[in-house]
Image (cartoon, rainbow, N blue to C red):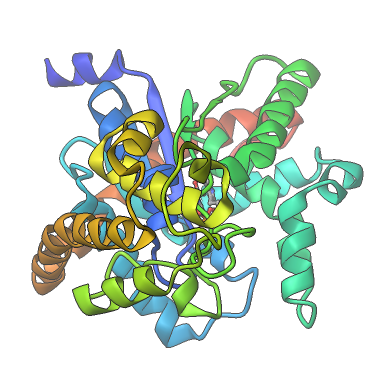
Length: 340
Ligand code: TYM
């Protein structure tokens, strides 16, 4: 009975790279929507460790972070009974399909990817082939599972467009094989900005920790980071404050955490000092993150619990991924094993 009901639901899939500290931008742009959409979808949530090694990682830290990210997915409210949660590297079909898709991706398309351009500037001592072909791996993540909807922040829009193009290209070249996925980019909070340099996005791997709020930051650190956040040179909130990168970002954070519209948020703070906005935002963050962190600690204290979820997740994922990959291999002309 349960299986029949499940199969009628569309598939939702998303992932986060275990690089740096999972940040408020990731939560607001992506995870928050995973949680709110999960009841209407078959959810697939991946810790994309293979993507993370496109920039240098320290092995011991990466290992720890992978588990920490999975635990934070659960702490955010992803129900492990109803969704599939796993490590990308536990499902070899991702790398296999990525190779095939690489052979259908044009250099011109990869050259246009703004994330590649940004990251090669930031890591100019390590501009590797993986960083360049990464969008084909992301397309494989999505297309293996016949995904309907991909909740992401605005910075992933271009990768999603390429994924759709690759799906259509493959379907046209052979026959319908992949579902063409739709992005889900939230209206509010699709691009949360850095706290100290609000003209750039908040990034979990920023070398300046004061630029982002980590979901695991303790209350005193949260308060300090918000106090230090850059605003414009005024003192009072006005309807125009929303347009200022720094002040507008703090107002957006408050709006999202308090489930208010931007207009309601301005009404609430109009005429108040910036320091009041910062105090209220810090309180709202603590009220949200303290219970999150308690759940996280509990999950990590039961070690087998997480390992079992990931093992089961990888098994379920492989079952679906194998089906898609064998279709792909057959269509492109590979001989099935055991046949001559
Ligand atoms: P990543 O790890 O950089 O970010 C994870 C998610 O967080 C969103 N995000 C933000 N949203 C709002 N404001 C911000 N400042 C902000 N920073 C990050 C991202 O848009 C993303 O949704 N390539 C992806 C990971 C990935 C993936 C996938 C996603 C790999 N395979 C398949 C979806 C489906 C990435 O690097 O995200």
